[in-house]
Image (tube, rainbow, N blue to C red; front, side, top):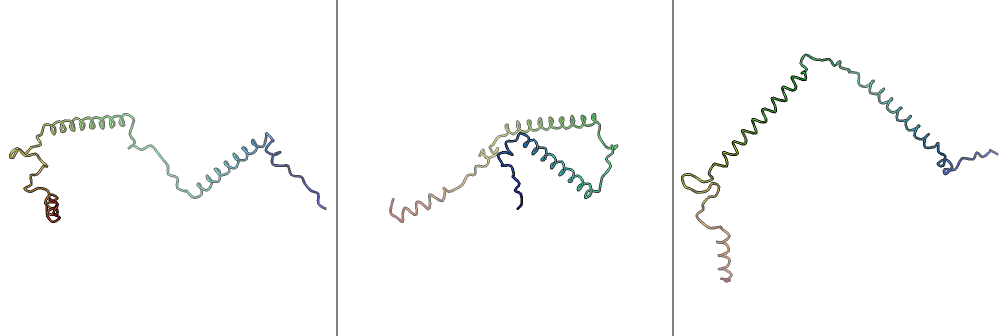
Length: 128
């Protein structure tokens, strides 16, 4: 007969104060192994490694500040120009100078068609 090895009960394992520390350490170890494996795979698959150097075309802080200030000045000038255009639009009359009629409000020679149809229907029904 084989000897029976007694396994600790789950409640006994969880009641041990060191179990959570051990689980945490194991999780950290697994995470580190995954990161190391990812780095190894990345280094094997991505073989191109460009050399980044300072270029003569790189801008200095002073040049960057000059560019930003120019952009701000252009934006301010554009805002002023738009304000003057809006002010001039407010002064423009919305009436035709020749006829005196308002723009976008055409005059038509007949009434709406719904009245004509309604009158016709009322006459045929005898409701009027």
